[in-house]
Amino acid sequence: MNGAETWTLPPAPPAGSIKVAHLTDPHLSNLAGIEALELRDQRLLGWLSWRRKRRRVHQRATLDAVVAAARRGMPDHWCITGDLTHIGHERELSEAAEWLRSLAPPGQLTVIPGNHDLYIPACSQAALEAHWGPYLKDAGDAWPRLQLRGAVALISLNSGHAAPPAFATGALGALQRTRLKACLAAAGAAGYARLVLIHHAPGPGMDKWRKRLVDAPELANILQHEGAELVLHGHCHESLSRTLAGPAGPIPVLSAPSASATGEHGCRSAGFNELAITVTTRSVTLEATGVQLGTPPQRTLHTTLPRPGA
Ligand SMILES: [Fe+2]
Ligand SMILES: [Fe+2]
Image (cartoon, rainbow, N blue to C red; front, side):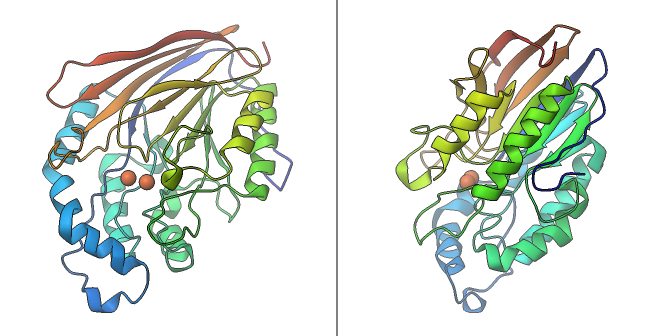
């Protein structure tokens, strides 16, 4: 299954519901044991940025508080939309894998890489697969990757690419976009509610030029034609509720703050999204609450969409 353009899915169950905790951008690793001298490439810039600011912006104690708050919602599934590390060093990827194991087993968690996890893809790709392998789903090199949870299809994208120095752009590339188109079509035809995970904001103009998804126009075009019921992303470190055009109406697009941000040094406080997805024979109802430490929870989405294939 899952060759370049062929996806074979069993028919979706007639109904079901799932609670999802969406956390993103924990940047949880500690670079204290990694010396600048061993970094002879672009990762040196990332190391300097961590020394100067990031180590104070992202704190493990804050992340632990966010995880504890998310656990209280008793999620059935965890979605982590990238940037678990700072510079994608093998030691960081290993530390991140330990954190993933502390959250949930692979059947109950989906993680995708962010630009920091693939800081220099050629350096990090093999270590990423080695350490996160059980959580990356659907073994093999090609993305997207697919995981079925009841009547929900989780479709994971990898937007990590070789960005120029001082840029935090992402890209899917032609092969991944071709596979995504086929995957969305197959999952929709089989009756699944399609939940797309991507690190970068998926639409044109949704993020700064320096941080954009380079092929966002092409992705938005695929989503407009094939449809999806929800897109979750990270990278922007803030809670946003937006939409992209879909074939049967707007597709909700949600982001969340960094799960470890202290709220100091000009950054927003940590938080996460709590989602309830309810699938009936004819509809998909999405309810999302944005939880930010120190502020009352905010309902960010409540909508009912037609079920694909109904
Ligand atoms: Fe990030
Ligand atoms: Fe990022």
